[in-house]
Amino acid sequence: MAGITSESAIYEPVLVSGASSGLGMAVAAAVLRHGGRVLGLCRNEASLGTVRDSGYDGIVVEEPERLPELLKGCYARPAAFVDCSHSRTESLVASLSPADIDRWALQDIALRARYLRTVVRLMLAQRQGRCLFVSSAAVDAPAVGQGFYAAAKAAGEGLYTSVGLEMAAHGITACSLRLGWLDSGRGRDFLADKKELCEHLIPTGHLVGMDEAVSCILFLLSRSSASLNATTLTMDGGFSRAKQKPGTIL
Image (cartoon, rainbow, N blue to C red; front, side, top):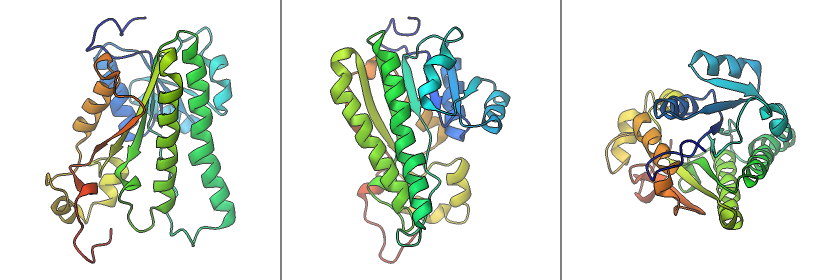
């Protein structure tokens, strides 16, 4: 297939979940600039509209298992999958209601597993593929109230590691990228009044830039990174390995 003939080229076509997020749209734009094909997977029409307004195509997928049917006749089988979807559940663990805990488990863990299962089965037919999960440094260094968010990301990392172990012999590899505080979207809003403090806590002295994150993701979608399999990389400026100042709560 096009896009996988050299060490520097990316696997494509690329499917992107979390397609209407700032990172999802930035990744899609970068894939297009590199001559690749990309399709956003959207949960609803509003998300689809955002994706199309940003300049790339998408489809609404209400059930992951319908993806093969939706792609048939209009799009090639995916060679890469970038999972940018993220949990919106942030709460003290003891504060969330039982109903909200059930919803979190279904939307932030089970749905991710169903998407990954479906995409891997699509890739099996051509015996090649690359799956990348965008995780968070919160797995290693969660802030107060990030218990559910961090747990969902940790579960995702576990799933992608297992895919890398189970499917590499079939030409399909997988890895996860933990991003630190991203100077974009929800991260920028959350850090609006804390940016200087947060930068002081990061050994590099700055938040992760969108360009940095996208460049790293493109590398992880390239043939050059094929041996980075069944593993997790961290891109947070060293924050999760640094000691926070006593009493600092974010």
